[in-house]
Image (cartoon, rainbow over all chains, first blue to last red; front, side):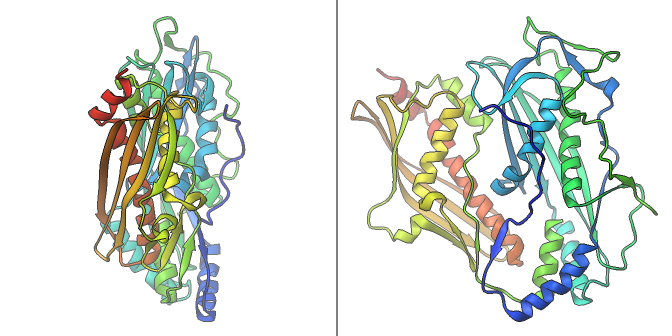
Length: 250
Length: 189
């Protein structure tokens, strides 16, 4: 099956619940009020790839794409499914491959992308402490948490080719609570979906472009060449920021 | 994001309800497995029956439990999910051939998931057989395990446990594919 680019994620309902008590429902309703006022911010350090920095491949080859989203190093199948379309869209938009598919190519190239939502113990304790206060005050007290995303991109041009690897990191800051103060220096996203889509696009596009600069990326008859003057025209330009993105107000 | 939401939901509400998570999705192929298959030059093979060990509770094959939550097996059988996981890796490497005389089958002999407050652990074992034209050329029981830091919040610990449990299936498939005895049996005429 060849991947078809579609609109990206829009679902976060990974968990189905049953048997909730009335008290629980009331508490959730109170928390939902605060959640409705949640804000999402991205670190601007990675940002979108500039058109003039993009690598152009003279003779793009087809590639088999593998993708997995992980949480603390363990596969997260639901999150994988939720963001996979955006990953495919980003890889296609790079213009580095003639075809992007999950089907094996005979002795062909394989691109493996893993995004890991890493959580360290200190962040976890801080989130629990702040979350408790936000819940205790029914959404009045503010909470801020940061999700750290580590992306690993592996590429093999063929069965005997060496594995090439590039990595990147992105931070997504989440705030909730009525008394929150926007963080400085971060880019505010319109909503959770926009934040995740932008994070996925940015955390993949830059290391993928770096990978294409490696001499081992292209086969001998299809050399890679940087072409600052003639960037490709992708189906979706990763360099274009989302229309609803706005700088954080301090 | 998720830890914070989980903390808010769990601590503010101070309540625990019996819950069920949506079934696992299709297994994802991995570069490591494809590389292993390529490096070993494994021939095409088919995936036969994967079943739970006889005499074990039926629930063992149908659901896995972490604290108060259960995760249903995809299509009602974790054994089948193991077979599907192997099939996904073979297919992604271009080595899945339902008409092949080489048939891999399996019986899940052990499945274990314990979610404690500080640490959690999971284990999965299966007896694999490889048959060529009906003759068994490989028969071995392989086991994999995992341990990870847990959390007292169920909303954090339970999905985490299920994620790690799912990861055991890919690990077990990788253990099979990288077993030199399996590779030799698959390639011997």
